[in-house]
Image 1 (cartoon, rainbow, N blue to C red):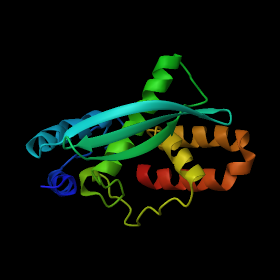
Image 2 (image 1 turned 90 degrees about the vertical axis):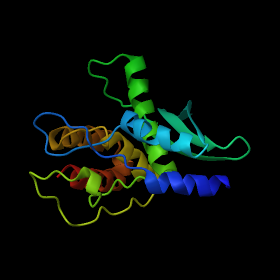
Image 3 (image 1 turned 45 degrees about the horizontal axis):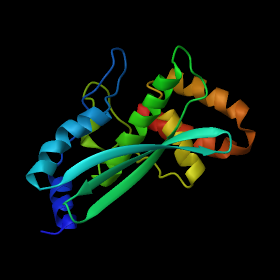
Image 4 (image 1 turned 90 degrees about the horizontal axis):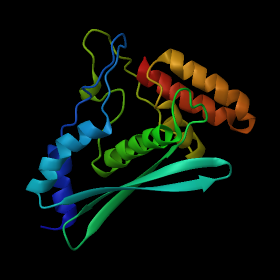
Amino acid sequence: MKINERLIEVQAALHAPKNQSKQGLHYKYRNCDAILEAVKPLCKANGLLLTLSDSIEAHADRVYVKATATVSDGENQVSVSAFARETLSRSGLDDAQVTGGASSYARKYALSGLFCIDNTEADPDGMVHDKPKATAQTSAPTDRITLEYMAVFGACENLSELQKKFSEMYKANPKDRNQLSEAKDIRKKELS
């Protein structure tokens, strides 16, 4: 069986529910660990080795973690990469924790891309039955800058955190205000 056929088998069988939650919040989410727990047995059953790697990239005055998720059958491989930017505000975190958080976030999205994990509002894995979800689909971001801001806003766990982070970044990045607003609106729909 070719590697793409094996990967299709894993993608079709994978169920990585949004089963993480925090007290007082009205949504569920999945993290990198939950995806790995669900996908490792499927990779093994299909003869695929999954590896994750990170690299640090600096662009302008910002630091990004580039995570790459790769599956290999010993001869061929398929890789997907994702970026997460280290946060500017480091309240209570040391440098290693900031980088580690960006790494976890980037890895989650690299895995989501590689295994085609749906992360939209309509994703049944994320439905919380005690609060109705909006039926509108989340619109896709239009450019790289918006995607980068979405990675930053994705770390916000509630609307209050999102608004605070948006306000800070809106003031600090006047040239990117349209992209900031688009990324904030997308995350707001996810959190609502």
